[in-house]
Image 1 (cartoon, one colour):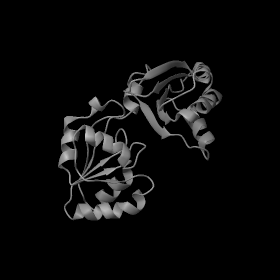
Image 2 (cartoon, helix red, strand yellow):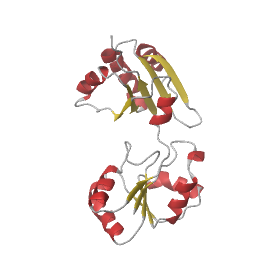
Image 3 (cartoon, rainbow, N blue to C red):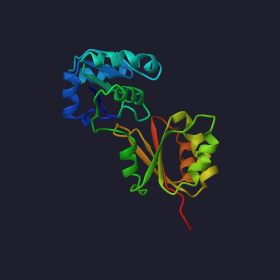
Image 4 (cartoon, rainbow, N blue to C red):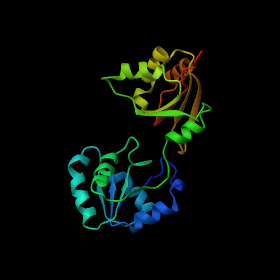
Length: 223
């Protein structure tokens, strides 16, 4: 059996009792970045053996892990922060495990998109999660499509791309579309900007972005 185990996106107090218990009980932990995960494991006194499993090695490592699962091992998969598979490694492993009729279970737990959406003040009854936008190829087309979407949209952005992304939101969505830009969720310097796309652009042009960001943008209003 393989467990997908969410880890805190910032504050370690967001770790669940069940997540800690399972990470102590499994035979092996697959970690996106073992250097990051080791801090978490040490904090919760977890001494389970661990290996790296990330976007650069998951394709050739999947079968090796499947073989271990077939041989009766129970494995826990974690990413650096949040829920595995949500803009992090995990999907390939789940797909292959299910093909082999291996049981897969994902624990409920932290993910950056939900708290950002809920505290944004933008309607959250119906929404779309975009992950990270295409870096270059297809980005313009994707933004044009998103600009016509009536539901609230949520996506992630890195600090060095944030201002450019806000410029593009003004260009494709218009200067008056309401957004929330949430920074460093659950961490010490968490903050949220709320306003229009043009106001957000002006703010972050004068306040150089640092940290990781979630952008929530209202859907296109129908006449």
